[in-house]
Image (cartoon, rainbow, N blue to C red; front, side):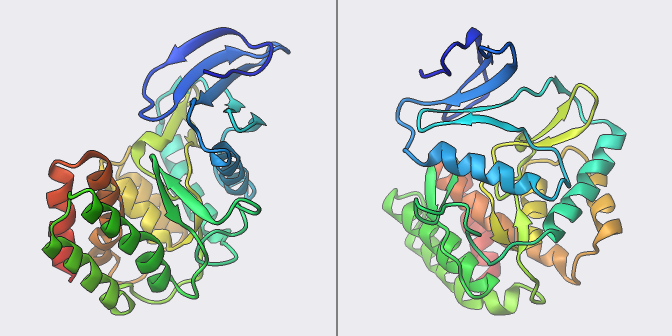
Length: 280
C-alpha cells in the first residue's frame, strides 16, 4: 500500500476488484479518494488521470478532480456517495449526449497516452489503442481480435467461437451502421462506473477513454442493468441515434462480454460466443 505523504485517517473501502481503495484526509485537511496497488504498471494511474481530465474538459458531466498522481497511486476528489435522483438521471442522459458530441481527434487514443504508448486498460487487461482510419477497423483490430486472441490463449473461447469473432470483424463495415465522427467515450461505462452523489447528481469514474462510436457507451450501460432506462430517452432527446441502433446493441456488447470471458470465464464465455455467432 502506498498513500500520499501526510495522509491520515486512512479507511479502506470495499468494491474494487483490482486496486485497493482508501478514503483519507490529506495533509491540508482535504478528504480524498486514493487508488493504489503494489504491482501497478508505471503508466497506469497517469493514463487514468489523463482520461478523467479529457472527459472533464467539455464540462458535460462531473468527473472527480485529479489531486495528485504518481506511479504508485492516484488521488481524487472525494465524492460523498448517494443515489441518482430523477434530475440526476436527466443530467446523465443529456450529459452523455454532450460528452459524446465533444468528439475526439481520431478513432483510438487522442493523445492521452503521449510518451507511454497508445494503450487502454479495461479491468486488468491491456488493449492496443493506436488510432485507425475508421470505426470498423478500430473495433476489429484494437478490440475484438486482441480479445479473441486472449480468450483463445486462456482456453475460454472455442475455435468455433474465435472463428465467429473473426467473421464478425470481416463483416463490421456492413454491420456498423452509418459512418459517424469519433465520439468522446468513457470506454468502460457499466453502471458501477456511474455514481450518484449526496445531492443525487451523476459522476463518471474509472474511465478507459478513447475516441469511438457513441453507441458503444450506451450499449455497455445497458448490458448489466442501467441505473434507469430513462437515461436513453433523455439522450435521444438531445442527439437521436442512427436508424438500426437496436440491432447493433449486441454487436457493441460483444467487446465487454469478451473482456468478462477472459477475466472471469464461466457463463460469459457462452454469452460472448452466442453473440459472435449471431453477428457472424
